[in-house]
Image (cartoon, rainbow, N blue to C red; front, side, top):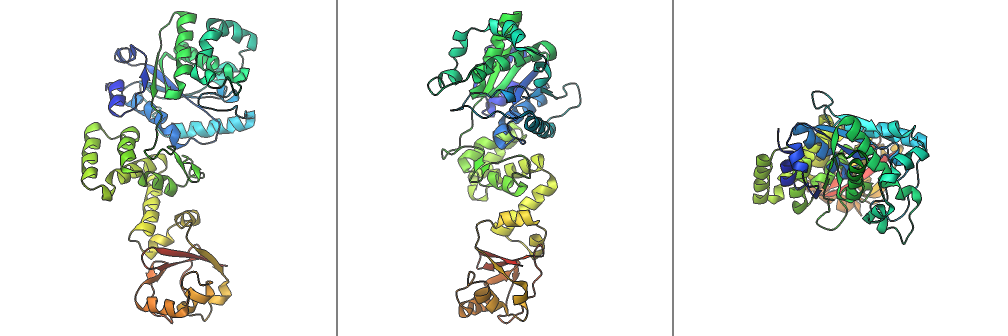
Length: 425
């Protein structure tokens, strides 16, 4: 068995740890859990740190438990929040739970002696009435203890409902339940969860004189100060309907050199020696973006599929490298529009293309977005600087008889980097 704590340490994934945690894990196989919040119907790459923590835990021979918070999702965790959030109705919550559970199942192994397990805390809370809860759980944790938590203190001035105040008791009972019924000796989570996690260890100690442990990972920050896991369009989701494989791939490809050296240790399954070798090669020629490509390829294939990765690479090469008409034609409409998001676009009527030469088309017919005049268009076509659908145009009087992409688009290219998308309707 690999030492889980040492594995996470060299990967830069240890923030806080209760004394005795490493020694407990080294005694033999044990179980640990992480809670996932079902406030959306997909996880995003901000959740990937915790997913990878469970993956490494399993690879070190232990049993990972992913808790999907069907009950806690009805309450709302105040940790890191500046205001009370809206509570979800049960139908939305159940939909989110099933989607999140399915995503978690694609990362962990559910076979073997240390098979992963996904649990829902609604299963043990649904028949737990309020009076029993405050008697069996609430009496063991003092208000003074709860008030001392940063997640509570930071909200006292702006206001904190009893619902959110009680969250740490609910999460604490989760730990107690899994400690008692699943032999979960350890709870893992982000550093903002430390207060909630140790409430669980305290409840186990006070209620059953048991011993449990806590360990957290650091919150990831980007070198430029912007939030990890977000782009201009918001979160980078694991659901391909919310974030396409192309955009997912591009997020990692566009990582800074400083960030990617940190990311590859956290998110890659490659071992220490291989990562150190890749990092050394990357530093020799950072312009080749070896670490970015390695990480983008590994994660896109793992989160989506090998086919999705090939499409993402192909889509990226269309915009930034050498590609063919066949590469362009292989893109579905959604990916095509995402690749050329932000380039100048215009619409033309299909009947206007009949008996039209490409010089007039690229100037007057397309509202002069590609060329300001026919003379400018003719000169650049003759100089070999114009392509349509990645096919070079060499004759200024050529007919506009190009095969439409997705039966509705033509892609004009002026020079190496200037693209124009023309919708034919």
